[in-house]
Length: 218
Ligand SMILES: [Zn+2]
Image (cartoon, rainbow, N blue to C red; front, side, top):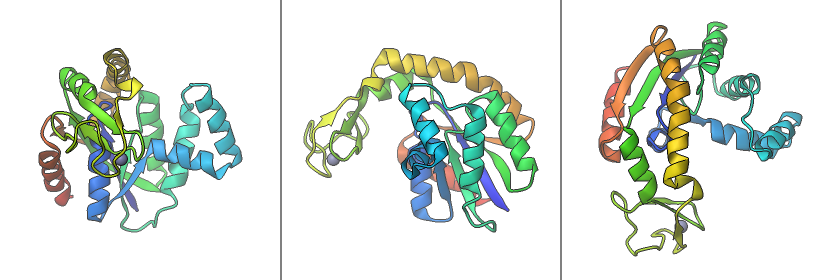
């Protein structure tokens, strides 16, 4: 059976970066909701066209569509021995319920939650320091991962910019949404699966080491 770890934590907690690193290391697949949506839109399937029109209107993709999509993408992996890091889903209580219900049908098993804990202050500070390459989308942090030359991408020489959604007001709003929707989800999940907490305020290397240790015995 496919086993699934839920990577949960506030936006900007670094869970996507860590999931990518674990995939590169081998032994894990990384399934992110963002990638799934982009992928489905690109196939120009009927569903992809529906999703594009929803996203273009700036609306959220309904839970029913999301859970069907996640299940579809999960079922594309080999059934035996695949370990998936699911990143960006579930985000709400109803998504969490739907996911557990699908898991009970036997296609996949939810192993547990890896919970990235990062305080609001740190998230806001990280966003303020984040710069992204206009050309190749590489991500920098002025404090913890500065470019070698100020304002210039190490990898491609492109110009580094600050994304509009990294400004403090937008970040605070995102965190607010997250807190109101995800706190109840987490207490719900706790009664069904293990929740392993990871201190997401550590350096990228230390978080990676902690994750390896936590997942090694699983
Ligand atoms: Zn670049």
